[in-house]
Image (cartoon, rainbow, N blue to C red; front, side, top):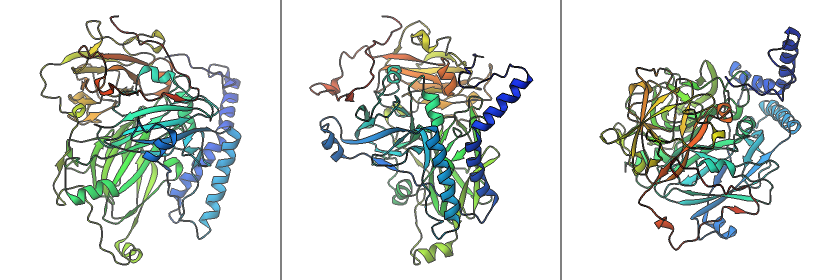
Length: 563
């Protein structure tokens, strides 16, 4: 176990009894506002007639016009600016107080059904023009088939972005952690090329190595939604209607209260509104900041939501969509995404562990007909012809790898301070079994150790499950980008396959427990394309700018296994 820093706590657990009592009192005092806020949220579940709040997220859309405004239309199809923001502790306390006061007033007014202001983040992100540094941040709306330019505006403290789950060339490298921006006059530029990318649910968060965990606890994260391409594998109009127009958002995080590890839904505004017996696409993101909790059991009420079918794991459609059988319990990691098709008949609760975190409020058919003047009910469904599954269209990086005979074996051991005895401070990459860098277009078969407790994440290249040692939390044959396998053993390990295609260069691997990454359990490996001397897709083109203004960027050359 690494030695924990206690520079922010005026005592240690190893002091005498008086010191322990004083430490407990100090922590309790510091957590008072958060605990009071959490009690206010939980109290809504304890009073059935209380009108709880529906979270309405800001959406950040990318447009061609914004590229024109910034003068970068030659580099990107669509562009957007995301602002980083900070709030002082006092300001956050005042925001929480105002939020609770507004909630109390609204419960007694005719405006009780309207959305409350979003939670204020200590460190976070917002859309331009917003007054709120929201927790979680805005939803980034992108489109499969387009090249996006995202411009991150700085704030009072250095920050950057990591796009978790995206299969794109210039994110997920070890050097990305060393890029940052500070100051509102400066913009850090990200090129997000989704030309050949599957649509799906992903997320973003701060990735400045020494600050990432602290920023996450302050609210510096949010969901990414990539709209589907024209061809997803079905042309059924009712299925396409369902995928596009029946969306609900559920973001679960424990960053409000990492001491207990309790999760809240949508920042504490935890009501989802459904019409009875209609299908919804529920996009779920789980974000864990607690260092001693690597997985989460999410459960639905079987009696009141009789249909819950998995659509996608970690932003990647299942091969067969949706899963034939309903499933009411799912095991998630500290960075999981899960898309489900869900149909409910009565009010119910969604639980994280044993804790109710979200309420599904269901309008009866009579109520719905009255509100919509007896309009015809929706025919949207996840099933072709209302009952048949369909098969997702797979880009190159998500093709089935299970039948490939020529694979390169490799063993990964994840620890609290290192991966394969390589720490971030070592400033050297992981090398293959022969001591060399990994080769482009190779199919890898990796045996994972330490993942019974440590969530293992690979940037850019999703992992296909090929052994029962990854079960039951992960479905054999499907792809994921973050894995925890509590039942894996020495004799039945978790084994995955990866295809190093589309992208070369350095790629980050890490334990996705943020504190463990801070202590060194994060490094990288290189993917080398021996046949490529220059990027043919950029011949004759100017590279997009990496910064507008002043940014912190690294000029270090990436270390190779064999120079």
